[in-house]
Amino acid sequence: MANFNLTSSKASAFILMGIPGLEAAHIWIAIPFCVCYTIGLFGNFMVLFIVGKEQSLHKPMYLLLCFLALTDIGMSSSVIPKTLCILWFNLKDITVGGCLTQMFFLHIAIVMQSAVLGAMAFDRFVAISNPLRYTAILTNARVANLGLVCLIRAVLLVLPMPLLLSRLPFCDNRIIPHTYCEHIAVAKISCGDTTVNRTYGLVMALAVTGLDLTLIALSYGLIIRAVIRISSKKAHQKALNTCTAHLCVILVSYTSCLFSFLTQRFSQSISSQAHVTFANVYLLVPSMFNPVIYGAKTKELRAKLGKYICRR
Image 1 (cartoon, rainbow, N blue to C red):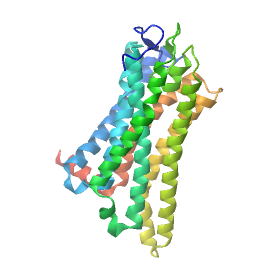
Image 2: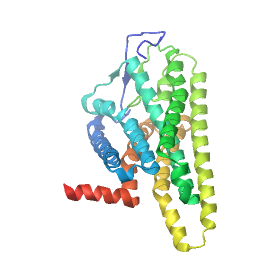
Image 3: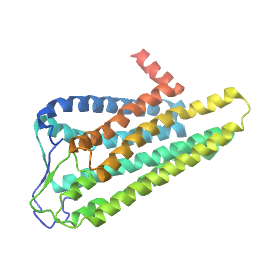
Image 4: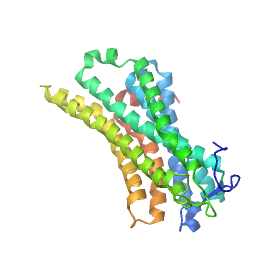
């Protein structure tokens, strides 16, 4: 991507300003960012380690959980290391190629996370409505293929974003008022017509979120119908408990995602400091809380984690 044809100043870099208006507090803001990032990395790598080591966890549900952990790691790691360099060391320059590459991998992780959450909803539907055929319907091979399809979808949808940006002219203003190369933030500093970029970004975001949320809503509608048909109240509770962790993750991920997306594009009353701060929080909070939620709500995973802690 370093060779993308920018019509002005190919060799010059963009400048990421960090959090505009809060420059004096950058050092202190970086501390909670670093703590959250470290906790998120530790939690997600722990999930990957435990599922990888324990043969009894080599099941579709836990394979999907590993996919979620990888997307969480990808989302935060594509942005936070550079953000910490800006906040702590004032290293604000980023090459054009580096900026477009960061944008590419960040948005792939975001689209992948949405797809994985949809796949996890379908997994819960099959587990509750067809428990006896669950392992036959959702084999590990099928889940792996589903993950590959989600990745291909993400690449195909995200690739036009940096390609379209590479065609825009960037004149004297190369300052991005952000901590990372967010698509709209980069488009806004162009001196050319960004209508196509803005339209594509909006349509893609709404299409991806709309499709995956529709799949999730449909899955849970069918789950509720299946639960209603169960006569035992104990079975009701057991079935719904299997969905608790997934529902909590959806709430954490989609609430922060939609708020960041909508305020970035439509709200003029929210300050740039709030925009940028929340955009970083959106990348940190799901990554930090998702392994905690699944560790607390999934009995089998919690037991394996306890075994390793006690062994240490």
